[in-house]
Image 1: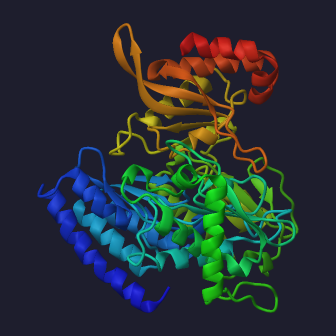
Image 2 (image 1 turned 90 degrees about the vertical axis):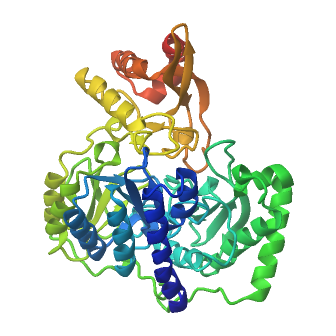
Image 3 (image 1 turned 180 degrees about the horizontal axis):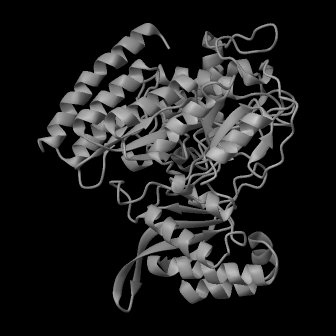
Amino acid sequence: MPQNDMRKFRGDYQEFREMTEKFYQKEINVAQYKGFSGRFGSYAQRGGAASMLRLRLAGGEISKENLKFIVDSIASYQISLTHLTTCQSLQLHNLSKTQVCALAEEAFDHGIISLGGGGDYPRNVMCSPLSGVQKDEPFDVLPYARAAEDYLLGLLGKVKLPRKLKVAFSNSRDNMTHATFRDLGFVATPQGKFDVYSAGGLGREPRMGVLVAEGIEPAKILYYIKAMVDTFTTHGNYQNRGKARTRYMQETLGVEGYRDAYQEKLGQALAEGGLDLTLLENGALDGYPSLTASPKQGDGKTLEHSRAIPQIQDGLYAVSYHPIGGNPQPEFWKKLYDAILPMEGVTARISPEQDLYIINLSASEAEQILELTADGAESLFETSVSCIGASICQVGARDSQKLLHACMEAVRKEGLTKALPQIHISGCPSSCSAHQAAALGFRGGVKQTPDGPKPAFAVFENGCGMQGQEAFGTDLGVITEEEIPSFLVELGREIASRNTDYRTFTETHRDEFLKIVEKYA
């Protein structure tokens, strides 16, 4: 990013301090502050007595230097809650007005930018968390995600961008970043190219992305980002804030109309030139190193463990860690830092499913990290995903974290964690947990009952993010919050009694599955 942009951004934090002071002095209200503070990746928590700060981490990558800053900040400010987001950011919670302002500036000075972490700005650029180390990937897409992040940050304050702009890169058909239904998604192909999707997104009125280009040269990605932005500035809805998202251009222009409009802007961008990325002779992206060429060697040992993933680099492993609810204990970060500090080339990455991957480990190092992370999920159900929830979020309708822990307790008590799928719980229709793309998802709301309205969640099933199998979940009805743990226990019992898995059960015993749903919904 140009230095003059960095200097300007640094100066903007003084205004953040001033507006935060006004909010805590009650000179401006929650809505006014939210409209301003989102630009800095910060929101007031529910009740207005504390703040959160969202740290941008391109592709979810946390270097040792980043990790040291996080550890030092937790110690200095006695931070009591950390949260891994589904956009691969890290949120720090329960901050005072002094803490949030100081932390935002200190993070910036340490190369961790919160700008654009919220509000009407480009969000953290997403990337497959094992890119560069995953077997069978076409190529490492993380360097391109980093380049895209720098380009988008350079647009802040210069272009009125779509709201909540999300750009994603995928290195495999797992499509963990949902690149095929984001505002803009780059999907690696076996030929070493990218296919490009645009104008998709979750939330209210979700849309699959439109395939706008196939087999593009990776060095050309910035032109495709510019084309998406220029298409929105020409055809996007600036009048209705609720529809100031790229996916609504599919409504106004139609799918083919959007594709044509995008291609027109792309042609103009390519004609103007100046956005080519530079590839070195070895194929690496200049300025953005890749782990694919890491010189690190294994230690001659091999390791078999459900959370140890063999890397493409012979003898090296990645270890997955899923803290329940995506909330690592604050003290965990120091333990992790102390453990990996002497380990050559080891970094951590946040996944879109709230996992933390510690990568580039020898077998012996992986054994240490497995022991350190033994308190995490050990079954698919335990890796369930939840947004931060209404106890903290200003716009959340329901406390998704509370529900997740209630479900976890009930299912564990019955010994059914291996029978159930990973569930995704969103406190509101914003789909921050991606409940619409989950095998089983829940969205916060209200249910009218004979005893009056009760806290509840709509149930969605059969969503899928896998490339080639993308589907948004079907709404099966609404279950009261208090009954959802019982619903999952009964469902788990039926699945376990047939010695099968959730997906097979819902396909081969469809009537039994729907009867259980109808009993509660």
